Amino acid sequence: MTTISIIGSGNMATAIGTRATKHGHTVELMSRDTAKAQALADQIGNGATVGAFGARPAGDIVIVAVLHAAAAGVVAHYGDALAGKVLVDITNPFNADASGLATTVDNSVSEQIAAAAPAGTHVVKALNTIFGHVLAHDTPLDAFLAGDGAEAKARVAEFLESLDLRPLDAGGLEMAHTLEWAGILLMGLARNGAGFDLALGAEVR
Amino acid sequence: MTTISIIGSGNMATAIGTRATKHGHTVELMSRDTAKAQALADQIGNGATVGAFGARPAGDIVIVAVLHAAAAGVVAHYGDALAGKVLVDITNPFNADASGLATTVDNSVSEQIAAAAPAGTHVVKALNTIFGHVLAHDTPLDAFLAGDGAEAKARVAEFLESLDLRPLDAGGLEMAHTLEWAGILLMGLARNGAGFDLALGAEVR
Image 1 (tube, chains in turn red, cyan):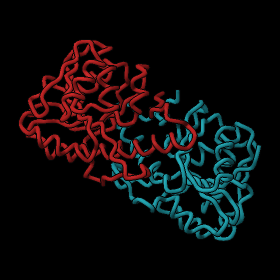
Image 2: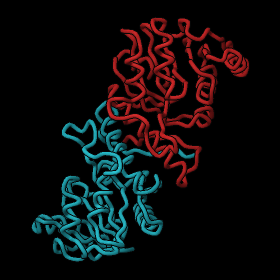
Image 3: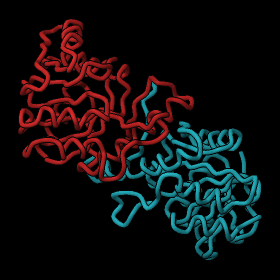
Image 4: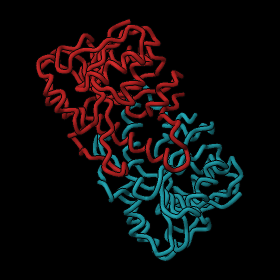
């Protein structure tokens, strides 16, 4: 079991933090809004702590759980405090009506984060194809991931497995954009009959 | 049970034709290469027939199972012979190394086909997130679809259900591009550990 740092205090931060503590991890919450981070830490309990926004995270895995448009800026704000960390980008960079993406090929949020992060930091995209409240159910689900750095990706995969998720590797960091499109697919299915109690997955035979 | 026309004689034409006849449909095969269509009809058996390439298809549902770069041209070649049909685009417009798409937003193969098709024809994207040999296994799988025309989409969904597939509607024709990205996700997962006995799906709770 390990310490996981989460930057953010919204829906996904709540779901991931809750699920992580249930599976024995220690969670550190960091938010620009310290009161909100404290409230979330109290809600999650199980030893969840609050870290100062912009300070070096306690965890080696840092979940970037802020809005997509803010993600690269937050990482730049942290700067060298993130050196050597594995950053997990969970964002869905939806356009205004969530019918398409605000990002383009070779400019996914993950790639934006990687460009803003200090040298030696790895970025892995994950958990953007599961709605937060579904993740919070704590039932087994598939979890796609993509990113550079075999060791970084292996550590994220191990973390996902510890949460009773099945990690499915989609490839290198350039595949993060494909996962962003998968977020649009998730939303399209949800809106067209499948409903929002939904996560993407794969049938492997 | 209904008559399904398939334009093409490759891997996907074989898988769809075989699965359709197993579930009681009559299959008509149409290919520029008549000998290949006849060989495939003989292989599929169960009353599979060969139709003349470019003639009016016997089926109300017409599966366009040719290479993505040829799809719109084939539909244009058929011209008015396709009037009123429901065209099913199953193509994956992969770039040279299948790491990304040859198509762009608002210019999916489905939208190219719709532009080339006669008025009153509907286009539905489907079956591009299941590898052909997996589809041929005849086991239950999820099948995403996207397209305009509620009635056309309902007919394709009914056809998919008859094949023991679970249709999951992703939205209108503009969502066909999202399904093309899902094809890239399928390929990325296959190449990065999941293997090629693979189909995408969704967990609905």
